[in-house]
Image 1 (cartoon, rainbow, N blue to C red):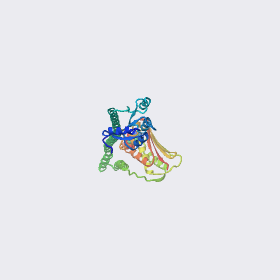
Image 2: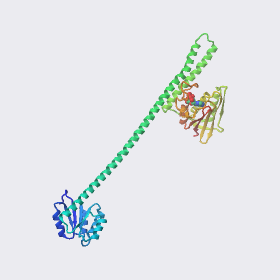
Image 3: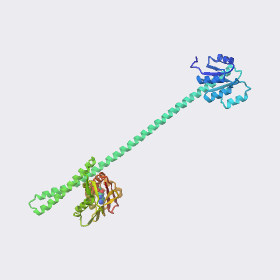
Image 4: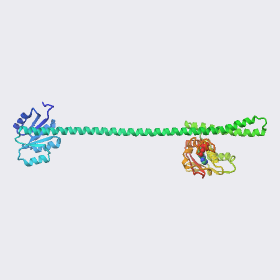
Length: 400
Ligand code: ADP
């Protein structure tokens, strides 16, 4: 029975008396396995755990060196000691240089000498194993650290991302807030103007000293102010429908030129003397299946703006068929728009001037509504302009 607290040594020698002496001398210090030939020694190595090999050199059949070669190629970690006569000089050189044996012991050996050699070989073997274990546990720890490091950087990236998203959301909320405040300031002005006129003129209508003719004139003004108010209220309702995703398309089959012509007629009556309004219909008939009322509304919004921002000059609009798209444009020679505001003007409640410096009126909703309508109808809207050089609003609607 081998003692698990002791190292196990394999001693190979063809002379059984040598094996016996070795065994008797060292059994108290080590577990000793013996073999009388290299072949037998290899079998022992195959079946048992061995910490150190000692072998005689001169053996019939397989020499000690040949046995060690085979053992070395299979168990390179095992420490090896060659026991040989001093005269085997070439053998010794090969054993030390190629087989990297730990040491050789001269025959006949002395107990203290061979014990010192065995113990140093075993100690080195123990240190090697310990070193290997430490290295592999370091490798495992290192891998673990690399993994934790990766997880940490991923976590940091996630945090950074969340932080960026939060900053964006905060900026968006602040922007909404700013726009809403501007809108309210603007709205109260927009609503007050027609309301003041309604209240003022209604008071006058009740006065006896005002003639019937003047009263009729005042009633026309009140009517105009009422439709202005209605327009504002309609816009607010529309934008809240858009915000809640409730824009409904009422699709019908219609002739595009009819809508453009209708809009032209309704506007030509109301353009001032300083403006020349012209309209270019498409050369061919364009029948589409879409929301004709929303198309009409967009054209009206764009024309309202073109006329509002052009005090003197030309306003032209029209339609053309371009491949599978119906292309519309509304062009004016008015105040123009700085390209850096191209995105801003399509946002709800946005106007290039602020509420206090504006002189053109409006509530900053027309383009936001138009953009939402066009996109709902499957098209795109964009503007081309330069400050002081007029503006052209373009949009498309798919032919299908
Ligand atoms: P508003 O009721 O204020 O006109 P819109 O949404 O229709 O609201 O337009 C937003 C802003 O875009 C306007 O206040 C104006 O600053 C700018 N804008 C729109 N159309 C034109 C145009 N044809 N020429 C110059 N500026 C324009």
